[in-house]
Each structure stands twice: as C-alpha cells, then as structure tokens.
Length: 353
Ligand code: F6R
Image 1 (spheres, rainbow, N blue to C red):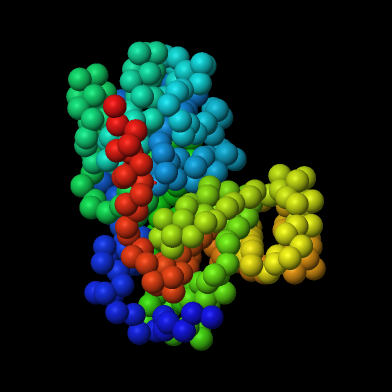
Image 2: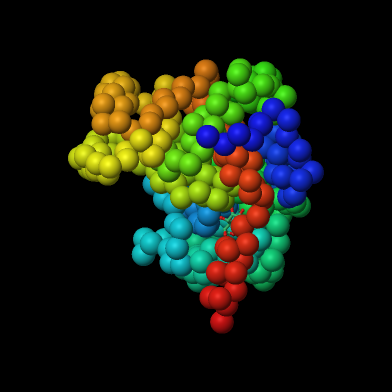
C-alpha cells in the first residue's frame, strides 16, 4: 500500500503544473465557456448539415466522444468521430466537420481540416490558435479561439461546452436552462465529496485511487458514459502515468467476458471501474450487475460507480469530475506530476518532417 497521505497534500511540490485548479474549476468553467460559446456566431447554413464529423486527437477528441454519446438519442443525423489523418469518403458539402485541437498543431487533426476544406464541407475549428487558426483565416471559416491555459485534456470543459453549445443551437441535442442551472449543484456535490479537504475516510475518489494504486485500471463504459470511460482511461495514462484500458457494455459481454479466464496468476492486479449509467437500456443495467459479479468471482478487483443525476448531461459531467479526481489522487500516490506528458511532445517531434 502507498503510505502517502492524501489528506495533507503539498500542492507546491507534487503538483508543479497546478492540475488541481483545473479539476476543481471544471463545473464553473464549463458554465463560463458555455456562455462564451453562446455568443459565438455560427453560420446559419450549418443547420442544413446532414452528417457531422468531429475530428481531434487525445484530450481534444474527448469533447467529441462525450458529446457524441449525448447526441445519440436525439440527433437525426450521423455523428462520427475521427481520430486519424483522414476523413471518411462520405464527407461532402452537406457535412459539418468540427475540428478540435487545443494547440492547433496536431498533424492528424490539421490534415482532416485541410481535407474538409478541399471536399467543400462546412467547417469549424476549435482551439487556442496555431496552424489551424491560420488555416481558418485563410479559408474564411469560423474558428472558436480560446485562451484557457492548460494541458489539452484539462481544457475539456472549454471544448465540451463549445461543442455542446453549437450542437444544441443547431438542434442536435437539448441542453435546457434548467439543466445548466443544476451545474452549480454538481459543483456543490463535488465540494462535499471529492475535493482535497474531504478526508480519505469520507472521500470515495481518494479511496478508489488508493485501491487502484499498483493496479491496472480497466474502465467499463455504458450508456452515455462510453466516451467518459475513454476519458478516464486516458486520465489514468496521462495524469497518473499508468497503463489503463477501457471496454464498453454491452460489447464487452461478447468477448472480454471470455478473456476474464486469464491471467490465472494475479487477476487481482486488474481493477475494473464500472461506470453504471442510469441512461442506458434496462438490459444493460442487468448486464452491468452480472458483469460485476462475474469479474468478482474470478478474483478481479471491481468497483461499480453510480452518479446521482437528473439528466444525461449531469451524469456525464459528474463522471468526468469523479474520474479527474481519482486519476489526480492516483498520480499523487504514484509520486508523479499529474500535468507532465513530456513523452507525447518528444514523440510528436520525432514525427516532424
Ligand atoms: C495532453 C493531451 C493530449 C493532446 C493530444 C493532441 O494533455 O491531452 O492527448 O490532446 O496530443 O494535441 P492537441 O489537443 O493540441 O490537438
């Protein structure tokens, strides 16, 4: 067991990049950026798009994966995520391509931006500037430029607020004032349960981080929490510097269940975090409970987490916040700076032509 205290955190020494402030500010910042996105002029013809493609990589793609889950039950048009160099062949003048890159320099996303323009697609960029902003100026297409200083993954609230705001204004998802009004209550919940001043004995985020210490996390997503499962997996990677994986229900019941026969030697080193969504098929709820039991019987560590929400948006935001805290506390137990991701930059520079 890590004998590091999570109740007397020395922020100056362990959190050099000040990741904590982004995690703590998630809900209030989401609302701020929602309002800013709301005054961004969207070209009126975007409403005619009959396909939507959201392009981005890593932390910048997460707004897309999460928004896609929220759009699924409402949007009448195809919504697809691209995390690669090329757009699908079907992209045409009737497709809206939203490219998100915090830095505006990620080569895969930039390539899709260029492709979208050459295919005559409706095009919108989101980020802090860089090459994408320059291209947007050249192409005379809208670019939602922000100046939130953080690692891309810690700017999720900006990108998610922007994508959801635009999608809601184009009629692909309903985000009511009442739903937004309740975001303050989510912050109150977070402050009462997960922040650093809540002692470990009462803090389920700290408790889960402690259980995850020296384990391989496998996050299971379900319903509207599939994109969040990917987000939390990436946070275990990038904040806690730990290998981590994710699986989705019901799909994993058709393969990973069989795989649970191994490793025979130490399955207890794998810790499944089941994100139990209220907004899913009833059969999936049963699958969630049965999956939990099966993995427990096979000696895996398992935590099933529910979120007290009154809308899919609330559930998604709470789950993101919970994952942020758990991965942050796990970083502290691992004694690593939650912010640093030097190897990504080194890797990108090796690829530069
Ligand atoms: C780092 C992070 C990364 C980046 C990714 C793409 O915090 O989250 O996954 O998001 O390397 O870079 P951007 O977001 O600048 O397009």
